[in-house]
Picture (spheres, rainbow, N blue to C red):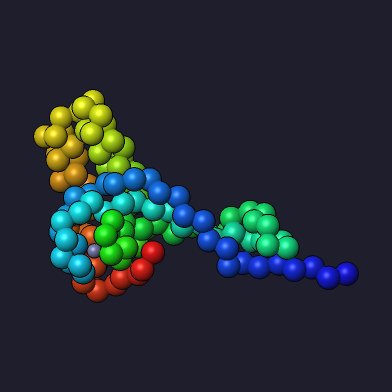
Length: 120
Ligand SMILES: [Zn+2]
């Protein structure tokens, strides 16, 4: 019997814009989007189950990204939710900026983009 399987299929889940910043790579003011990349085990090219997840903040313009660990991903999810609430006028801009500052994700993203990058 012939069984065709693989491990290379990637699916990207976009959690939306999270962090406003000037991209150190393309130098455009933008919002970094929070994305989740899952690698899937496939059988006859059909995705069966995911087996590995990575988390990224990526530039909305040049798509360069910074990888996040699990803890920073959780913080970034809270910021992405706060961003949506701010845009829906459910929280103030001051509250969003306060949450963003407390997350310390902006400094992390700027520092990491100068060293490690990935095109997403
Ligand atoms: Zn960029």
